[in-house]
Length: 263
Image (cartoon, rainbow, N blue to C red; front, side, top):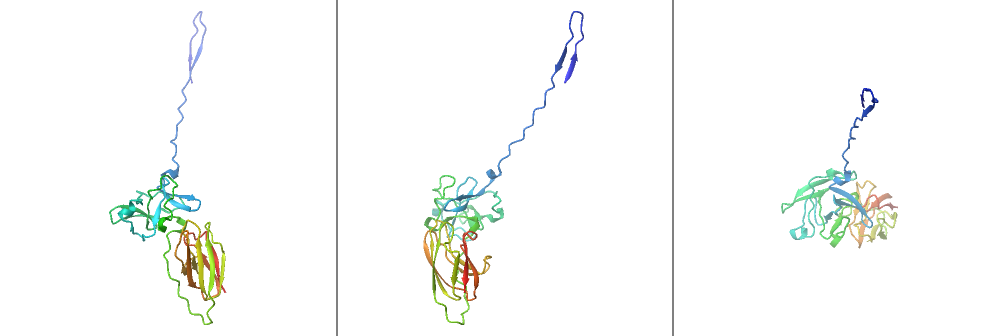
């Protein structure tokens, strides 16, 4: 503050005036942009479907079961209803790995984003963020749950040595998948038995039954075909070595599991 003194003259009073020193204007920091607004690919969740991939605007992404790794089989008439998805770059939340995404060039010259090498699509009837009207359409179009992706190919059961003892009697089991859970947590069969599983998937999401040596799923004994909102029969031979094995749904390997006991 600057002080100015005025001398007193005869007949006048002295006065002191203060000149205020202006305070510096507060600096303003630019508002930060929430990180999720920059995502080009994200994860959403929906009752009856679970987690699924969408684009940066919330529009659902799908895969085509008739495609294969690194190859789109969707023709021009198909992509008229299922437009290809192509992201210029991959900004993803921490639950996803950007390295799982890539780009292919289709036979028609279009660029298309892939997830774990599977091409990604939109559905024209999805109008707003969160629409999933293409889920399970014609049993070949599905949303993508990162936890159970990519889909496992159907394989024949692993050959088992012929047991020296008399063959065990056939075993029939009813197994239901509903609400992203099996209705049985434990299945018990005789060693080497012929097993028939009546599998009924009551969810709108793809499920299957698969039998492995243990929870690492490194060695399979049987992997059943995937079904959605339908039933299927699985036939295979139980392992001949007694012990506790592991079964699961390959699409939801952490949510849908159980123990397969061979006696």
